Image 1 (cartoon, rainbow over the protein chains, first blue to last red):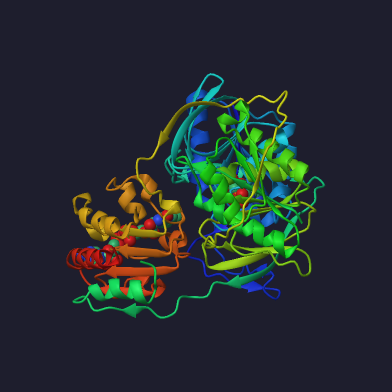
Image 2 (image 1 turned 90 degrees about the vertical axis):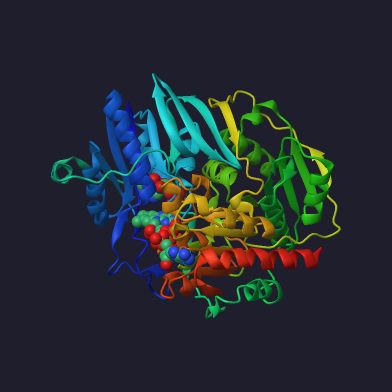
Length: 246
Length: 325
Ligand SMILES: Cc1cc2nc3c(=O)[nH]c(=O)nc-3n(C[C@H](O)[C@H](O)[C@H](O)COP(=O)(O)OP(=O)(O)OC[C@H]3O[C@@H](n4cnc5c(N)ncnc54)[C@H](O)[C@@H]3O)c2cc1C
Ligand SMILES: Nc1ncnc2c1ncn2[C@@H]1O[C@H](COP(=O)(O)O)[C@@H](O)[C@H]1O
């Protein structure tokens, strides 16, 4: 089975956020990047498990500039066979999806996995876009994935519960929690990652339909109002009369 | 800019997030002197139709087609495209929920419409068309401009309250053409949660963490939720150890919620937890450690032992509810 796993990077959640260029750009100075957890923990690890069980090849793909190579090597250390970086600034979701779809079209992947969402932008969009561009079925927010021959059985989160669906390959899936368990790269993986093939591909022509004009830091909450532990009923009163939420 | 709003029912009733989306769509339509049309796929009761009208839809397109019962996002995107074409809709609104996350991106790629997923503001029309969403785990907002002629916005649920008017909508049966498209996805089994109140839709949420020491102590958490009419949630370690079901896990890697009231009991307030709850309007923190980071993000705080405080809150809430009835 030929599997493509879409990988993005995101700042570690504990990163202090700052902007530059009149708040029109994210300031990457001193930002510690990680592989987006949904991509690494769930999409990539499940792809590797499927390969280990049934053979095949796992390719990582990222749309980004040269500085992303470090993050791609991190993902390779977990165990993929090879990686592709499409050399472009990934600022619009449809633009990113068009790059990945253009590459995938010529390659006949059986399975394309994306993460549920990036934890910095939470779009949850790119997997669905790729599926449309390739005319493939899309199964969003998958929490379990098993294969029997050419047929995938998938459990996915839906409104108010979960459902089990079946679909023949090829298809596109977005991976949510439950799909696999996080793997910690070992020394051998890290060493091997250094020499695994990382192909840089130039971008195809495509329009960017959205762009960030302005970032604004979220306003912190006003001071916390403390209620003495001996009079918790006061809290209920304040929630009713002051906050007016109950 | 004519506006089309994708709406749906759940548990036999129109979803609150759909009414929010119709309100929102109607607001955009009135900014541009056009009208809002709601699209509903499948059955809808008379009450649902009335509710969509009251929320601001001038027209409702109802689609009934057996091929759409599988809820395949590919087919739903085609149906939505046909409705948008018929109505000349320039702006298409979804809720940023399970269905929205599956269908809006497909439609965006299909009709080459810029998508802002998880919007939290009305669009600004001066100098183009732009709309805000939360980014970096709620640490900032980003204002996105959309430059394509057609625009798709998926609205983050619970971002705007629902306002109903006496408006009524015209109901039209809309036939879609799905000739030659077959869904390849076969639905084998649907498992609905038994909880009466689903967490992402709840206005009030009572949540607890490792400070509760074990699942046997959740009775008081459930009691408090019950008197308040709140849903229950938990921190990630609590779901991971199996004290509570996974669908209750909130935070960066769990469900993101933004209720009117979030009560956090015995939760330290790690940044990854906050990422899923800091959009809540009012936050209450109960923790025995005065240094717990969560207090920095709280509106109300009690420093003390949850095992003593929570039962007293239950009693006080019961009294309040008795007075209200
Ligand atoms: C990549 C990543 C993603 C993550 N995603 C999430 C996520 O989505 N959601 C999430 O919740 N976590 C997430 N975490 C974990 C997070 O970092 C914290 O470890 C977790 O939120 C802590 O849970 P807790 O507050 O229940 O437990 P603890 O941190 O152990 O806190 C327990 C609290 O209870 C208090 N307490 C103890 N006894 C009492 C008492 N009797 N009365 C009152 N208070 C008491 C203590 O003072 C303490 O503050 C993630 C971590 C990582 C690295
Ligand atoms: N620049 C990128 N390159 C490759 N894959 C990406 C990129 N950005 C996002 N993805 C994939 O798309 C998923 C959803 O991203 P998003 O729609 O931005 O929330 C991520 O979890 C990744 O799997």
